[in-house]
Structure formats: C-alpha cells, structure tokens
Amino acid sequence: MGIQRSRKLRLHIFGSKVHKWLAVFVGVQALLWMATGTLMSYLKLEHVRSEHVISREPAPLSSDAALPAWAANGGDLVSATTKMVNGRPVMELSGSDGSTSLHDPSTGLVLSPLSREIAEGIALQAWSGPATTIEGVKRIAKPVGTEFSGPFPAWQVQFGDPDATRLYIDASNGAVLSARSDTWRFFDFIWGLHIMDWNERHRINSWWLLLFGIGGTIIAVSGFVLLANRFPKLRRPRAKRT
Image (cartoon, rainbow, N blue to C red; front, side):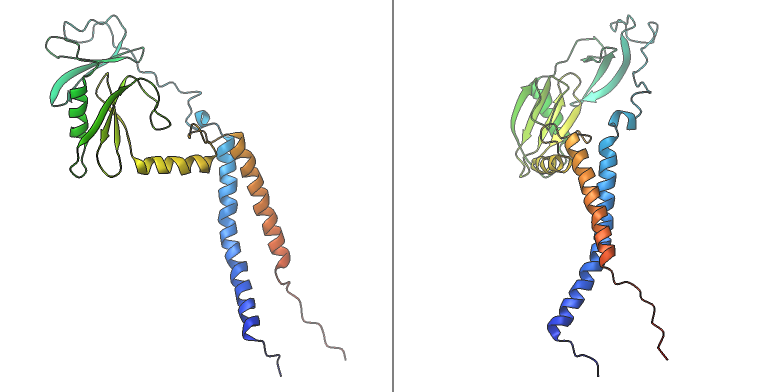
C-alpha cells in the first residue's frame, strides 16, 4: 500500500510547486526588466536620438522672402506664421536666436509679452474638462520644481478643478507649453523613484540606476541557477538485478 500523505503535507507540496513555477514566469520578467533597465541606463539618450550626428536647427528665411513691409528681415528670421491667439489673428516671427514675438498682421504692432488677461483667455479656451474657474494667475521667470523648466517668461494659470491643474503659457507667443496636475505630480514622484533620479526626474543613465540594474541582474541570474539546482532530476529506472 502507498504511503498516505496528510492534508498538510499535500498542501505544502502543492504550494511549493505553485511557488516554483510562478517564480519561473515572474523571474523571467524580472530578469528582462533588470537587463533592459541596465542597458537603457548605459546608453546615452543623445545617441539614441541621434542628436550627436543630426542637426535640427531651422534654415533661416532669405532676405527677399515675401513678408509684410513692417517685418524687416536681415537674415535673422527663420519663420513667419499667422495664427489665432485668444480669438485674434496675429503673426508670429521666430528669430535664429530662438526668440519669438507676436505682431498685429496689419500694423506690425508688437503684442508680446502677452498680458495677464490674454493668458487667462488662452487658458480658458484650452480647457476642455468640466466647468471650472481660474483660481490664480502669475508670471514666472524661473523653473517651478520639476514640473516646468521653461521657456521663460511664462504665465502659470491655476484652475480650481479637483486635480488642481496648472497650465503654463508662453508669454512670448501664447503657446500652451505644459499642463500639470496632482496626478502628474504623483506620477513624477514615483517615476523619480523608478529611475533613481530624485531631483531632476529625467536622467535614466545615472550611476545609481546602472549599479542597481547590474546588481539586480546578477541576483536574478543567480536565482535561476539556484532554482535549477532545486528542480527534481530526471532519473532513469535502474535495471533489476537478476
């Protein structure tokens, strides 16, 4: 008669098998996460984007380009665009030095930097969520934590929605630059923990992340070695003695 196993022993054996096979599937993903995270930490983001060999500088407009008479171009303009800002048609001129300015299309009157009232109008026009109000508006000229780092000057428009949304508007051309909320701030916090960049939150190739990635990979590989040693070995049936 076979040996009768107790319910506790059968439960222990079943739990061990589940744990063992679950560790295989989870361990594979953990190994992939560690290995790929280590590789991403090693690679430079500038090389990944080919920024070291490709220039994205815009070509300047020729001095004889078709422009209004008031838009003097000595070769320092790269673009002239007509667009709507707060329900009004304006012309945006961009210089080779990265500066932008808004003008009245007819007279050339400079409209930038934009006023507080125009910034509020742009923010309300951009809002597409449930009805809310603007709680505050202020002009900023330096980075705001990790949620906004320029360009400056810019307008910060605070909405009164439950997620405390803040909109950042370029004071030079009226562009909506960034939208931040409590949800974004929470994600930014856990992202900083994930990539181990507690201050800037955008470096994925820090030495901390690289060292911990290498350590995690070694732990995962060694765990597979230990797991393989614990697997029951296949034994061939012994020949019966005569």
